[in-house]
Length: 107
Image (cartoon, rainbow, N blue to C red; front, side, top):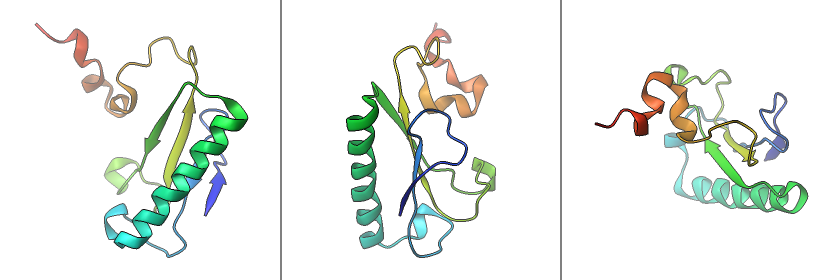
């Protein structure tokens, strides 16, 4: 299933969700994984056609330590737009802010 996120972080933020109740991406079958990724492609195509984003973040919070609050696997597709934040470098690395800005930490 593919739905728009109820608490979107950007226009078009959507979720790809398997029919079978499963908590972890690592618990889906190969066929389910293929189906999820095919549906992710459809969600991306829809976002491109309707919103023309400049990029995407794709994410899965797998386990409570990773921030999973809904105990059912779902894949986030987050359209990104040039200028939506001042400096998008690091992308998903910002889940642990002290580790995100690796490019300025080089000697």
